[in-house]
Amino acid sequence: MKVSILDAGSLRKTLLRLIPKHDQIYMAVAWADSGPVADRLIENKRKFQSVTVGLDFCATDPDFVDAILNAPNAYVFKKNGACFHPKVFLFVTGEKAEAIVGSANFTNGGLGSNVEACLHLRCSINEPAIESLIVTMESYAPHRQPVTQQLSEAYRRQAEIAAKRPRSPAPVLPSEEQAFHTINSDLVKMSWPEFIREAKRDPNHHFNTRMKFLRYLQTLFAREQSFLQLTSSEWKAVAGIVHPDAVADSGLEMYQIGWFGSMQGSGSFTKLVAHQDEHIAKAIDVIPRRGMVTKSCYDEFCDLFTDAFAHSARIGRYPTASRLLAMKRPDVFACVNNGNKARLAEALGFAPSTLSLENYWDRVIEPIRMSTWYNAKRPRGPDAEAWDYRTALVDAIYYQEV
Image (cartoon, rainbow, N blue to C red; front, side, top):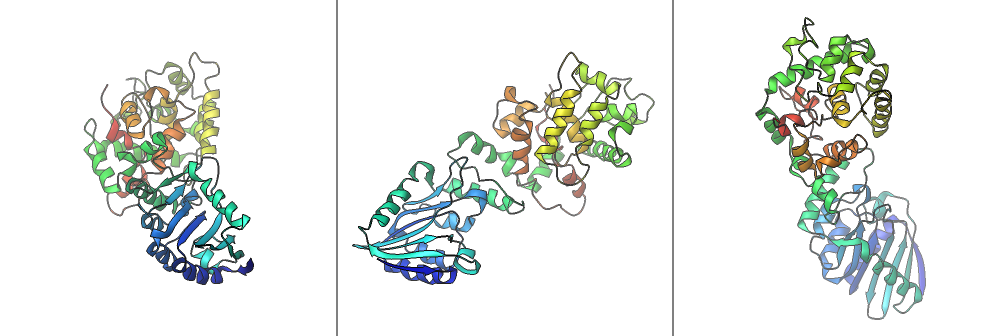
């Protein structure tokens, strides 16, 4: 056996030489990029025995995934709770084998600018180390899947969105049926032009009137440091309390405060709003008026919101909570109510009866944050303001009178 050490540049040159030289190609890498070495690999795809690439954090180039579409013995790897992280290259011709094992992925960095260290072994196919490598790569079979057109299209869409985020989780693949149904839904795939066109159709209400109300609410949150400082009528406007006396003589009669979910029928919530409960105010205040809203922000909101109902006949639930959230941050939250729940649940792939305050973030907000329209660049012109309120405007698309 001959052993040598390869850095990133040497690895690149070696792979360009070995790919066309040998009859059989094995590869297992965490991530891969397109480029000259990948082109050489794809030119020799008929030699593939087992070529497996990971997609964790959406770090593999979608162009590479497209390149191995329908290639024989080429797979992507996905195992929940684990990151696919090997870096193994094996080439075989007859009784001769060359294996490269080390730190380098099949990426532009791993084959170029990175500081890498890999062992290059030249030996017989019968060496125990080579046999073990082949067994190891075949052990990935339960968690790998071939690249189909559906998989490649969905992965590209998710990778493009992930590129705009600091660090993204692993993509959802077709084998995860329920989750894939969600990220592959019409709502998630909808472009911004399609979304705003559907929102403006607003068959049950009037789009400009919706915008006028959301615009007004944003002035309230900009005016005061705490929700507790708003007037009683303003609390009711935010909360969707539409009793005729709720905003009488306050000047708020001009707004359709029941749109985005009327909460008049939620008795315990209505009482808390009427008394301007401190826990409700604190819950709303933990949601920042600008910038990133994280899951931890939402969890803190839920804890305070739930505490507000400690002495009430009923507990706080997602319709009232999401109404408050959507009115403060219409760019992040959507109000889910009896009018839109069924159609929204169908669009996002969950049973309406299973939605709760505890899973609202995962079932509604996370899929929306993965949506093409949500991640579109803020437009110029008259639709810019609607982009600022875009998540709340989901109600304009999915609401039906009940």
